[in-house]
Image (cartoon, rainbow, N blue to C red; front, top):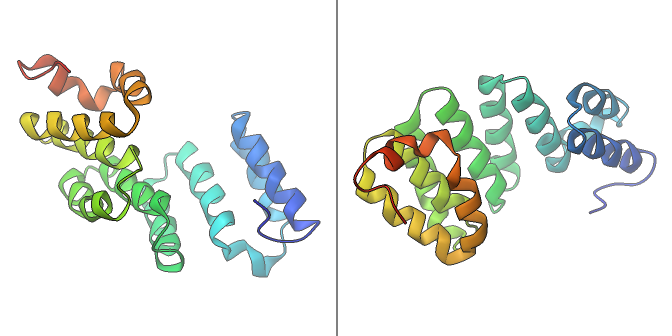
Length: 165
């Protein structure tokens, strides 16, 4: 995707590349070279969210996700990021409540029912967890099975009598 012109686009792509290589510090440096007016572009904010998540600054991640959501409410990642940050802030019920409408808005995004399953597992709602996992698998079974195999958020589900797919 090309959200803006060179050289800003080059710095943006470089930031994405550094993130893919697991180097958020270099990614952040690249974002600093982007024209100040473009630093609030939703694509730039998305990269910044990932950098901030590497730092585990979940309050800042929540703020970034809410900003992206205001700018691009039809962007599934913004919904996912907001709820993930809420969950990491130990506000799991709120994470579930905020993501739930996204299941209807983005029926082809497996991550949404998968995350809802994780939140249900953490909240002790194990039958509901199974239902959400089944919905996620209906979208992308192979990816969900791989993700679920070692996800610590699903440990209560796997440890329960409900814990099989």
